[in-house]
Length: 348
Image: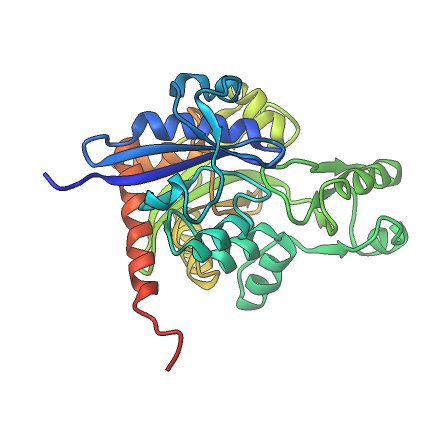
């Protein structure tokens, strides 16, 4: 048997989704095919320190992995230290500094293969206003909204173009952190101030009355659609609390109980958006299916959750790709993308 490929599983990070990353990474580690791959654990603290973790993966989910200095030592140089022997990185990182193109740029500078979308696609999908700017002109239906650059912008303008309730969300943040549903002017003002804590741009969007549908897509140039699931949130909408803190209270229906024609529209829209945004490896695309039968794309997640309650791996499993095989496929797709990029010339 050939030499095992060394996979650097990166977890934690400077993000509001730090704890979710720990849960996702633990599941990825447990599912890794150890006959084909050798794992190196790279943890990033909430303060941004990179640590090489050599301890028991069981200590990762609760955050205790970094407590023992004998098993969590500073990485040092990212370019010539222990990370230089890694063949491919698997950034199991959600949100800021994880799926916004920053760490992807670092891997590019290191000349390393990595799992998931590239720099531009990651950054463009992380900023919801950019996603809209690219996809809406292409005919992909998305919620109408206004982009705010300052918390002092006139609420009157919002009220003149949108009806209550409205959704207020940070433009560049993931997993519904900082997202609020405002029913009146007072709640709107509070929601805007809250969203600006997390992002320099804020989106105020029309309320879409419909079911929340999530779709999984897997692949590079020839992606495959892995199906859709329906969310019945335990809260008013599928916010951070409903997704992760009380996730077991939210109902997940796979496949989603919508008409076949609507499912086909979601499939076509998801694949079109995937290609137009230049996505690779994987993404979860979130939709609304309205009561009057419309399909509306909400947002794109380039590194969706891999926890035990996460929709993406569940959808892939329902499509015949079990968790362990999914991880192996993602690693292969990362190598494939890296090899193709290395074929390009950078000078004459």
